[in-house]
Amino acid sequence: MDEQRNKKMIIELDQSVYEDLVEFCVETNMEETQLMSEMVKYCLKESMNKMDVMRKGYVEMANINLEICSEFDSCDSEAHSYI
Image (cartoon, rainbow, N blue to C red; front, side, top):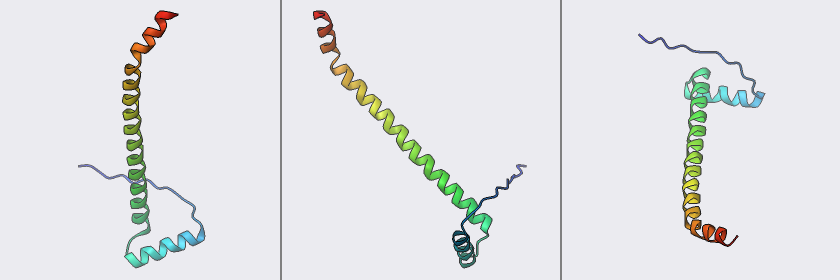
């Protein structure tokens, strides 16, 4: 049986942000801890998605750079033969 373990974190919010958070929780009938947990999960997921897109872009650019280099390899070899 897996036991879910929770950790506590203390955060500081501006008064107006805190009031908006409490108001949102009241209107949606949601616990503050549940809202904060879901917000953190969402932000982490979005950040990971952005990093994955950037990683993919870097890999694609590396492949393009390799293709460009291989296109000019013969020119490079020819230039070295004249040196």
